[in-house]
Image (cartoon, rainbow, N blue to C red):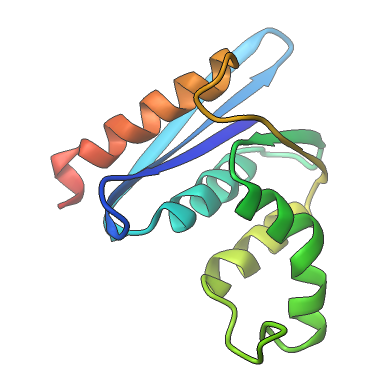
Length: 141
């Protein structure tokens, strides 16, 4: 699964996209929000991609967001242990989405891979295109 988020302004109109691949099949998912942040869209892309998987499975999530990858693989353990506050004793930003992502991750066996954005990764480039198109979608306004 490849994910990406986009935002026109930060905050501003945003879009997210996920590409699911399995046994030669490909499914593209995307959506938008009228007023959001890039980080919220990155999280939403992963949540919606994992939600689309009907059965528990092993899934590699490829993202160009270090925020997303580090948050779900490292930081979340401390946030949960400390009652969803950061080391600076402040509430975790986007807690609602981190909790939703944690719930989806617990349904599957996930591995997380970071890829450089806007580089030579065709699915990441396609996700970026879909997320940017979704962010421009006037139906979210």
